[in-house]
Length: 413
Image 1 (spheres, rainbow, N blue to C red):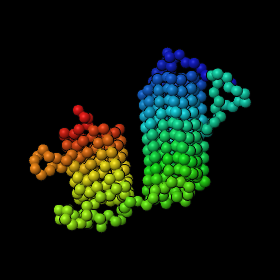
Image 2 (cartoon, rainbow, N blue to C red; image 1 turned 90 degrees about the horizontal axis):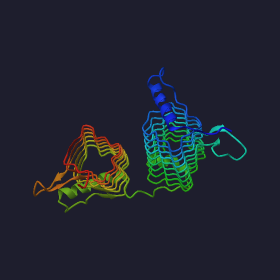
Image 3 (cartoon, rainbow, N blue to C red; image 1 turned 60 degrees about the horizontal axis):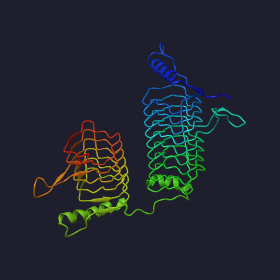
């Protein structure tokens, strides 16, 4: 039975340096091979380690955050509790790897292989330092929040109680995998092969499932609330014992009649008609392009992928709305309220975002508010932003390239 090799810090440093040199000048460097090495707790954060071999290595609690680990071989390796946040593991071989408790938030695992791997088998009890490699990839309680696993091979892998919120699993091969108790809220599973996949007790609210292969897929007690209509139609025949939404509070097709009454209410100064107020209504993918909306309330509404291109939005209340992937390109927003809204991956490219001046003095303004909003990966490229409030907003990877920003509040100071 092969034992793990202890690697001295100087030896590890030389191996990594030679490997990095090999990546740039193969004739001078040497490809790194740390197979069956004990590297528990090692710190290699933000190092280019592409194509390095870690087969059978012990990397428990290692710091690999921000590393480029593309095409690396982790076959049968131990990555329990490792820090892999933001790491690139595209096409990595993770067959039979142990990922329990690992943190892979925002990691890239496109085309990665997480199927079962077998390095060795033995019948007797393991001795200290030996590793058993006859098991499926285990990612129990691991964090894959916002990770990209598109086209990954994950058949028979174990992801019990793992966190995969907003993860991309499009076209992944997930046959027979165990996601019981996992949180896949907002994940993209379109086109994935979910044959015999176990989602017992899993949280799949707001997930995308259209086009996924479903056969003997288990959704017992799964939370499938907040799905788009096409996703509900696709998955419901296979998920009779799962939780789905009740009928929405307001149907999108009734919007025209409600808005007509709202326009009458505005024109009459509130004497006739009725103000448009929607709470927890479903307007996912609805087209509001080029419309003028004034003093409309969309409180806590589901508006995923809604289209506001070129619209004029005056004191429109989107507080608490789910506006992921919504399109505000070229829109004009005066005094809009996005407090506590989820605008992840929303597009505000070349939008005009300003305060609305009130009658009675230049200092009386209603700012556009993004307080506590989720703006991860949102685009404000080329936007004109003035008198806006972004305090406490989560803006991970938000794009403000070329944006003009005047009197914008990001802190309480």
